[in-house]
Each structure stands twice: as C-alpha cells, then as structure tokens.
Length: 123
View 1 (tube, rainbow, N blue to C red):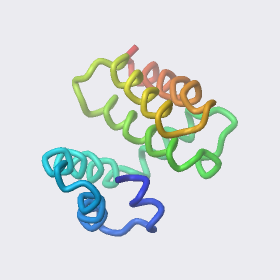
View 2 (cartoon, rainbow, N blue to C red):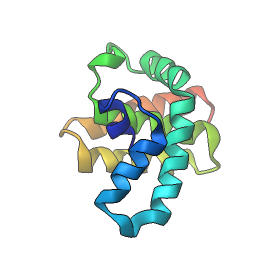
View 3 (spheres, rainbow, N blue to C red):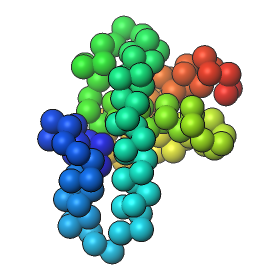
C-alpha cells in the first residue's frame, strides 16, 4: 500500500486501499489493518524519513529504493509504536526485503533498522 501510495504521488491512503483491495477482495480484514498501519506511517512520514536518513550512512533517502524505503518506514514505525520485540520487527522487515527487493536489500534493511533500534534503546 505504501509503495502504491508513493508511486501515485501521495493520494489519500483510503483511495489506495480501495484500489489495492480490488485486486484481492478476499483480504478485506487484512486491508483494514494494512490501511491503519499505512495511515499511521503516512501521518509521521517526515519524521520517519529524517530518522532513516540519519541512520542510513552514506545514503540519501531519495537514493534508497522505494520498496526498501517503505519497508524501513514500517519497521521504524513498529520499533517506535509497538510492543513487538525489536528482533521480531527487524526479522519481518528483512523477510519483506527478501521477498520484494533486490539481493542486497535484506542486509541494508537489517543494518539500518538495527542502528535505529539501538538509538531507540530497543536492542
């Protein structure tokens, strides 16, 4: 959802959700949870991006791939706002990077989120 939102230039997230749900209407319950997460991330995007940019040594945020950037946004949001153990958050983000991003993405996502978790005192 966040990828579609970003590629479409940031329309209301509800419009993106409706579009995504048309592809797989059996996932309505997951769509509601995904929309809530995407909305929370979009609401804090400037702060999340600033923190990711600071943690991604030698990488400008605009040079990070859109898929990886959105995985990092979700991961950082979860590190800051959920009770989920940091290692689980990082592991799930790395798994998403394996599935949806390039071969170097999992290590990159792991390194950035590990650094952010340490700054937040979660590791």
